[in-house]
View (tube, helix red, strand yellow):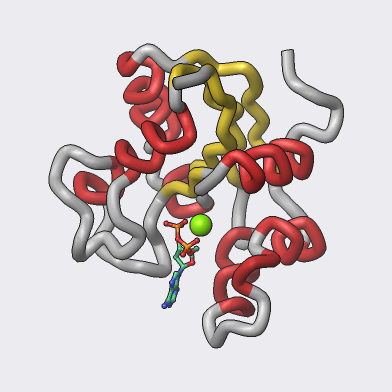
Length: 138
Ligand code: DAT
Ligand code: MG
């Protein structure tokens, strides 16, 4: 058990559908704390770095196009075991498998438009937080 900080992105579909407040509220109600928040439209170069682990997969180009199609809300979310806890609250990657009560299970139906991103490990969180909050966190 340890306090961790993880990167959450409300993706362009979530921002466009007006779900930012709802999603932030869920994390805050759980007891997690915001250490950073930025609404930004990322470049393709940043998107390719963010999704580097998926480079070479057939859906990589679509992933980059989608995440750069509009603004994202980048959140640094902190709390006890926040990396796994946030992923549990997000639900399964494919919304058709996401349980009701999770963010994806409540708001998404399509794999390509699944509303949120959350870091999947401490190494990913460190790398991704640096990409979205290059000036550091409060
Ligand atoms: P997660 O976002 O749950 O960490 P991931 O890192 O495996 O999932 O994939 C990143 C995003 O890529 C995911 O949110 C949706 C998309 N994606 C994953 N697998 C895909 C596939 N087989 N076809 C199309 N898009 C996919
Ligand atoms: Mg992932």
